[in-house]
Image (cartoon, rainbow, N blue to C red; front, side, top):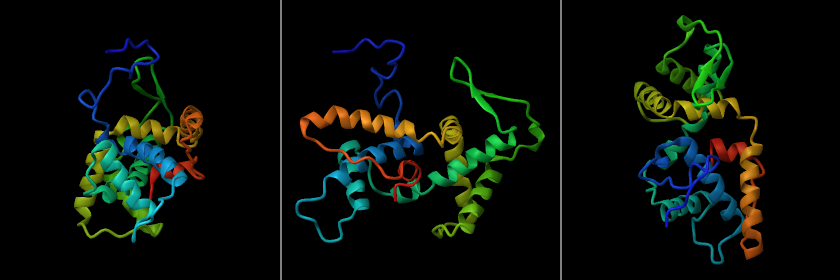
Length: 204
């Protein structure tokens, strides 16, 4: 039976055919934060050899959402770099971005000639990752740049908005608290993340 959605519940009748969130790094990261809330509150009754929080998350993603684990680590490890690209994208455009009534990004006064390309932003993010001691990749430099630039292009609006509101991790906690309050009376515990931004940006 199809539900009637009001203006505040536009998502009621959405499904994977309308919008496949599985290709969004940010939606993936939020789903991981939710799954980790259950995983951390439910240690395995009979732990298996080599089983960890990471392997349990991988298995849960595949079981619940049908997302194959192949390439998963590479995909999620891109999230911090994508958010750094978004922060620099905003910086290049004057540091101010708003959203109009239709949900479109609205920029302030901008010197568009000083805006870096997506490739340049990706190169910057990879350099920051290297300086921060991030994990090394065996892929060729240009292929890494191409990968980040393509993902950034595909999820630009969400990345920009997340970078803008990144310090407001309370949104994530609020939603998880709502779920915990809903499920608590049924006896299903959830454990809120101690560091929500870690879960949102880089689950591992």
